[in-house]
Amino acid sequence: MTLIGCGKVADQHVQAIQRISDCVIVGLCDRELLMAKQLGERIGVAECYSNLQKTLATVRPDVVHITTPPQSHFSLARQCLESGTHLYLEKPFTITATEAESLIDFAESRGLKITAGHNYLFTLEMLQMRRLIKAGFLGGPPIHLESYWSYELGDTSYVAPMLGNRNHWVRQLPGQLFHNIISHGIAKLAEFLDDELTEIAATAHQSEQLRSLGAQEVMDELRVLIRDKSGTTAFFTFFYSSERTQSTSRLRSGQFNYCGYYHRQYRSKHKPLI
Image 1 (tube, rainbow, N blue to C red):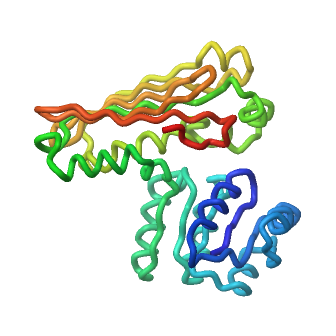
Image 2: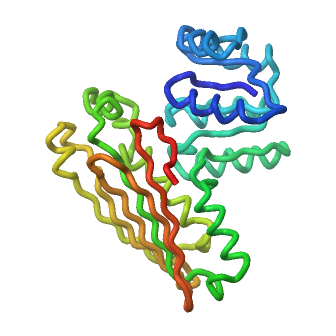
């Protein structure tokens, strides 16, 4: 296993990888070599590089985790796939759908596995939701879904880099804050919807809290209505929360409702409180 990108989110990947008994981190790569070395010193990995091709050729990993800003995902992922490695690509998967389709097609053509970093799909409540649906608890497939995803702006140490720098990579994304975060919430709906969507209606605005912190052009409140070809409807909300963030998923069939939720608090290192 090799990590490409050794910033803040890489620590979460390291913690998850270290829980797998037969998985070993054999190399680290970051365009700023100091970033790779500081992580390597903390976790006991000596093979640290600033060049991707040298990393792949030297440590020859079976799997690569890419945890860089999303603007670099397509190029880095393509190089990893060309070298023959399986790939775990942090969200947002790519900047555009065309890039995503290209990577998936290329991985399939080479017999490699590639996946997006949607770890919240495997929380306890999501696993239970799938078990209940498979067991027929809802009396049929879902006909309506709801996903609520909140973002904590009260802890300015988490958002200050983005708010204080117009050139921050989040603000350079086409969808800015939404582009970086909403895939977690949307992913909870996608597995229950058809590939073909017939209706999408979305509205966005800026919360009073974000307005008071600056970054006037950044939106942080989003409401989306979705209908697929089979008539299944979905509602997604992305919103600001002052202290504790709560994410909720709801599914409804003709007979029953199911609601799965969890709270998480950034001050507790993003660990779900279930």
